[in-house]
Amino acid sequence: MTKSTESLHSSWHALREQVEAALERAMHLDGECPSRLSEAMAYSLHAGGKRLRPVLVLMACEACGGNLEDAMPAACAIEMVHTYSLIHDDLPAMDDDDYRRGRLTNHKVFGEAMGILAGDGLLTLAFEIMARDVRPAVVAAACCADLAFAAGARGMVGGQVADLEAESRSTSGSKVMAGETAVEHESDQQTRAARATELEAIHRRKTGRLIRSALTLGGRIAQADVATLGVLDHYGTCIGLAFQIADDVLDVTGTQDKLGKGVGKDAGLGKLTYPSLIGLERSRQKAQDLINEACLAIAPWGERGQKLQAMARFVLERDH
Image (cartoon, rainbow, N blue to C red; front, top):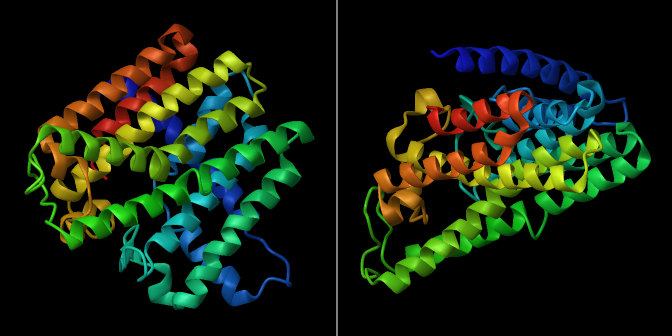
C-alpha cells in the first residue's frame, strides 16, 4: 500500500465516521413519522457502504477552502438520494435483487409497498435537510436545484429509463453476452459505435450525474467561482463514468461476498454494458483513460487536490 493510498484510507475513514454520525442524527424523526416507515428508511440508510458521494462532497468543499461542517447537510442529502435510488433499483419491477450491501434488500424485509415509501421518504427528507440547514439561503437554493437536476428526469431517473429501454431491446433481440467484444448480429462498426454512444449516455445520467453533483455541491458550499465549479464538474464527469465502467467489470469478475450483492446479473438480463460491448480489457483501459483525465483536470490545484486525485485512482482500483 502506497503512502497516498494509506492517506486516502485514513482521510476517508475519518470523513465516513462523521457522515455516519450525521446520518444517525438526521434520522431522529419525530413521532409524526410512522415507526415502520422510519425503521425501513434507517434499515437501508445505515446499511454501510463506501459513502463515496458524501465523502466527495466533503473533499470537494475542503479542496475549495470551505468548512466541512457547512457541507455535512449536503453530504447527508446526497447519500439519502443515493440510498433511495438503490431501494427502488432493487425492486421486482426494476432489477429484482435480493441482496444489497451484504444483506437482504429493503423490499425483502419490509415488503414492496414499504420499500417504495421508504425510498420516497429518503428522497424528500434529503431536500428538507438541504433547504433547512445549508447556509446562506441562496447557496441552499442552488444546491437543491443542482441535486434535483442530477437525480431527476434529465439525470439519474432518466438514465434508469434509458437503461430499461436498452435492456428491453437487448432481450427482445439477440442477447448481450458478458466478456464478448461485440454484440451478436451487430458486428458492423457503425452499429457498435451507436450502441457505445447510447451506453455512455446511460452511464453519464444513471450513475455519473449524481457523482458530478457531489463535487459541485461541495464547491457551491465553499462558494467557489464558476471556473472552479467547472473543474469540479469535469473531474466528476470523468470519475462518474469510470465508476460505472468499473462496476460493469466487477459484475463479470467480482464475487458476491466482496460486492455485497449478486454478480453476473447484467449478462442474464441482457443489459448493455462495456464488457459486453467492447470486452474486459478495453473496458479497463477506457476507465483508466478517464481517471487520468480526471487527475489532469485538478493537477493545477497542487496539494489541495491530492485527496481528489487519490479518490479517482481508488475508483479504478477498488474490488467492491
